[in-house]
Amino acid sequence: MFEIKIAALLFSVYAPLSWLIAMIMSGIHKKPIKRHLMLLMAAASFVYIMTYAKFQGHLDFYTVLFPIQALAVPLLFPLFYLYFRTITSEKVEYNWKYFIHYAMPILLSIIYLIISKIWMNDEEEKRFMINLLNGKLLEGSKFVFGYYFFGFGRLYYLLSSIFYLILISRCYSKYRVLILNIFPTDYTKELNWVKGIGFLLFGVAILNIVIHYMRNNNLASHELLIAVSYFTFGAFFYILGLYGFRQKEVYNTAEIVKTENFKEDVRILKKDIEDYLMRSKIYLNSDINIYHLCNTFKTNRTYLSAEINKQFGMNFRYLINSYRIQEAKKLIAQAKEKETVSNFEQIAIDSGFNSYGSFLRVFKMMENVSPSKFYKTIEKYKRQE
Image (cartoon, rainbow, N blue to C red; front, side):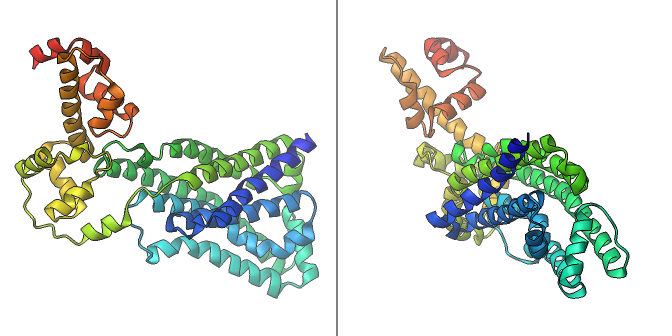
């Protein structure tokens, strides 16, 4: 079990560190949506290097660098939230609301730096850290203050992890609604991997609560718990790094900036939108999004989304896909008239879908039948219409 525990500890270091190096070497860290991910991997790498040093008894190393650990640990959940918010929001504003997420971790680190490096001498700091890890309170005002301040920092970390889990969940819910009003059926925008990461993140939070409320001397004897916990931490950062490295930008910033300054007092009628869609057939473009219509009608995304929902009783995604399905049904009918075997993959592309999977799912949802069954029984559906 000892070897498994060491392997799990090393894996928790390797997972974020390997992706941090990969991002630096590839140059993708220069992209805005990757910066928070890179900072998260850097913080996690340092945290788990320190954890490995602690369990291996390198307390001199651990003691010297602990003020940085006091910064890195409470930054993990805020950095993940900021990364997630960056990839799911149309535009991230770097105002005080953004920087406030860094405030408490920085403050905790500064106070601990003052306690350990200024108030205590080297010998006192080392003695304090050894006893602190074992849950022992030394006599003396500086030791008592440091002990309870450390407890406060640990409590803050655990409460903040719950707080950021709630923020991430709310952010994801808003994102799911937002993309329905921006994109039709582009799975590169869906971030389906986030669901799996979310379950892992919940597991990480639970294990964090358990191990942070066990004293170091008690935790060290629970090798299975250490192995499971740090393997889970490593798996979380490895999977996050894998998908985060591949993830492309969800939104086109240039499109957003171009349309966000359009006025909202433009009167757009339902007939105007219908005429434009029928005339331009822009729904056949698989890359279409609502910003194309914003540029046409010279209005911003918020107003146009609201008008589509109000006038059509549906969101942008459903509206565009309804036109695509009508096009697909027409192509299927033409194939039936010519008595040729319908190529549904090609029909999907010709109808504006970017994949057959998207086409099949939407067709079934709107017509309550598969494209192949629709082809076989098309006369029945014609009579119903």
